[in-house]
Amino acid sequence: MNDIRLASKAGRSGTRICIGSSVVGRDLLLIAGPCSVENEAQTLEIARAVKAAGANMLRGGAFKPRSSPYAFQGLGLKGLKILAKAKEETGLPIVSEALDTRDVAWMCDYVDVLQIGARNMQNFPLLKEVGKTRTPVLLKRGMNSTLSEWLNCAEYILNEGNADVILCERGIRTFETYTRNTLDLSAVPAVKELSHLPIIIDPAHGTGRASLIDSMSLAAVAAGSDGLIIEVHNDPAAALCDRDQALTPQQFSEIVRRVRALRSFMEGLN
Ligand code: PEP
Ligand code: MN
Image (cartoon, rainbow, N blue to C red; front, side, top):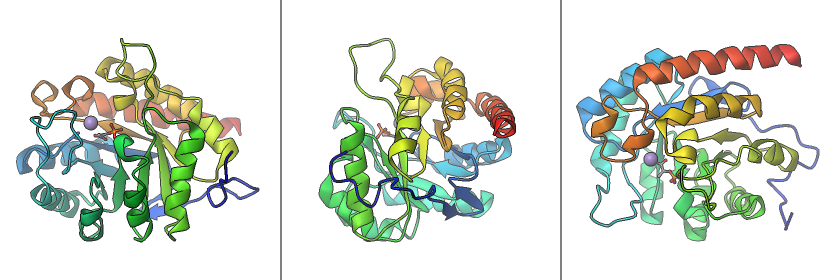
């Protein structure tokens, strides 16, 4: 593995990151929420529902990396203020994507975890900028990236002094078209061999299909994933972004019950 130093396993035990009342790397991290923050009522309703279902963090995009410049681009600062309100009410720490180096420093006042999206995995100035903060980073795997390239990107963040990096596998591009991406679940045990960093799975972007999320969530936990990030919407059919992969709060609640049961069973195996 090319020049992986700080991210390398090299006899280290797994990194643990305290965020709110969760310890990532020890507790099962369950991040849920809408693809994008659309308005206050939508976000608060989803936040309350995912909290009740057992999520331990709230996701929501305020800056959206859309394929088309004409698609909804996110609410920006207004969206972050809505997320802050949701946190105030539910206590759920906030995960939101940073798209631009100029936004990183001030975004830390609103979010508990800075997400680096798949399209920006190798945006080296952005990696260096989040590396200069003390806010934990959720680093998504680029859709065309190898494990080595991905770990090198984590290395950029660690090298700037920020030790709190969580990796997120979200599917890679293959010749398959039925699924939006091909979810590489082998990345979980592979990363655990190579690195001390925690890794979670995004079965929503990984499949692009709501019907496949339950199975892939269970499979991710069985593979040893440190958590899941799942898109949940109060009215999936009306979601402004990624509606085909959004779960209802009820569906999410059922998955939480099942993955927690599987995780307890697996702890009994050790
Ligand atoms: C997202 O989490 O909404 C997102 C845009 O993810 P990705 O960068 O993995 O496509
Ligand atoms: Mn999305």
